[in-house]
Image (cartoon, rainbow, N blue to C red):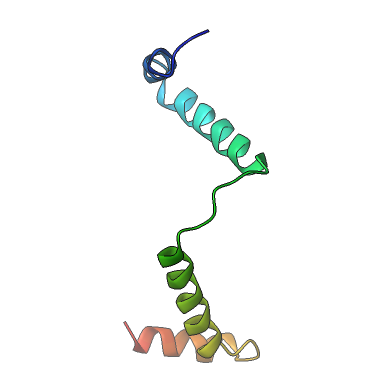
Amino acid sequence: MSSRAEVERAALELSATERLEVAAALFESVEQDAEQPPLPEWQRNVLDERIAEDDAGCDPDEPWEDAKRQILANL
């Protein structure tokens, strides 16, 4: 069995495309893992704040041109 360090060294010898493919496969395997670690409390709070801010400023029925004008005015 290879150690983590050996696997890492071998992975770093791959081309950039191959490393991205390996990274994607690793991320997919973590997503499929039923025992994902919970988010830290501070991170959950930040996400909740951002969701609330988005909900407060979002009008799903606003025409695109109006929304675009408002976005550009805030730049």
